Length: 244
Image (cartoon, rainbow, N blue to C red; front, side, top):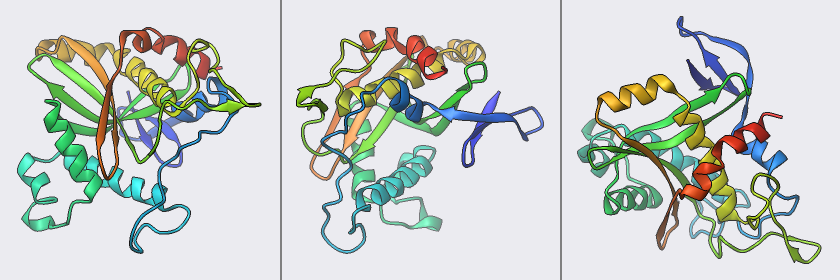
């Protein structure tokens, strides 16, 4: 079973046509059920030189442009990525796109798929893996890409002047940008690992484990966070909460 994102996710049957109800996005459901009511102190930056990304929503527009370029080039060859899409599609790589693929190379991650939808019809939820990579001969890595978010990503959300915590099953975790993004990745990872057919196909190909990584990219640096066992153990419980 697959899904496709229109204005919402929907399942795609064997005929290739969407069917069934709209599926709720995991990120939004986490915001409604797990994150605190406080606002993050950092967000995708809108401070840019020039006119292209100026304005109050510059960071969002830039992030969408980077996501689109990364999604297209993740499925292409390394030579095509170096040229922005090959001789027939000459296009300058955005700076953050270049940083993203350089970071993947640095961490030994080879991309081959992007915007890979994962879903649970019973729970009525869905999301997409930003980029699927292989590391070594036997490991698949699901990469969550976040652009911007300058500053201290671990800075706690404040409620009534005090650091806020998340709700169950993350009640011991301080609510902050880093933890919100790791929660999103943990839920995405759990959905992917639920696919029995995919797991069997990967095993036949020699893939022994599926990992996750959160990669922050900005103009000055990249920062990668591996999805730890603590987060992976809570993935299924996060799916249960988002389904309510």
